[in-house]
Image (cartoon, rainbow, N blue to C red):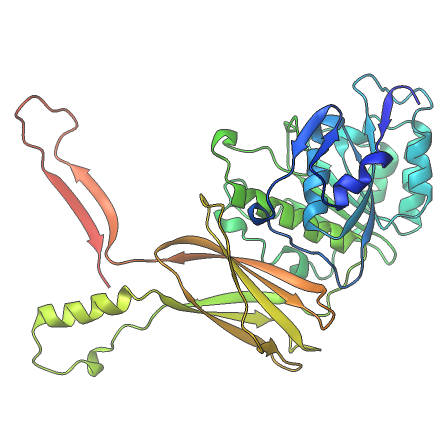
Length: 390
């Protein structure tokens, strides 16, 4: 067993509550439950049996994913000196031969597989085990590359890639084209092409653009995407999914609705009061009429804030045959994530969706200009503020 870590003994800390989890000498403190978002626990389709292959310093990703997703992780990790030439990977081969639902790994980790372990992985995939593969620029074994090249793009990627909230996350504002969903009749594989260099402490997440200013709420969306892809690769086909969330701004008075001959200042005050209203309607749209009745739960998160607000209305559901559901929320100006979940009658997660929202206040400052950038004592500085009115 020399040269590797077989972490079967700490699985309980991964999918149950524990004071702290230790991986490869690194202690990951337990976060308060209010700080993180549980995306899919329990899942409608049941707990996902996942084999995770990753370097020791990156296993915090496995811990955090298992807190947010209904996952039973079985973990194999390499030591820094394991070159795949000894027989320390027998435990990994046993895991792969047991027909897990999905394997989570990275191209960096796969470089360390022995030939026998690679064969076990390929056999498992041939029997229908899904694969979520993070790509950081490391070459793949020719056999695995040929397998990926022989698959077709997923016929229906929208349930996986819609509602991730990527447009306001720093790393993903250009879209999710780098996520490849590949499938055949019996196999599903996800490639997350994050590009190089590989993060030193992650195997499922992107290299952060500005790690010192990384926001907790962006981290949640990174793990939401991984959770969606794991679920899909494990064979999930949605009964229902959320196609969009529509934010309805408070209506401005129409010109025909304003009585004639009112002072201009009075008309402006009416418009301003309407624009400053804090109540917003958020309409959740399903892709198709609901095939069953679902409980709906919403949540508001704001980048820069750890506090979240949960919204659920008693005795209100999306009934079978309905296709929309409306929340009325009090939101001040700012940028938010609005998360929404569908639960079935047994309180299992059917689907979730994150929608970025920007609530505009009034007036909106569009530009700030100074008459000079250099001042001497007793100088006068002219300041011009440009605002946008309704």
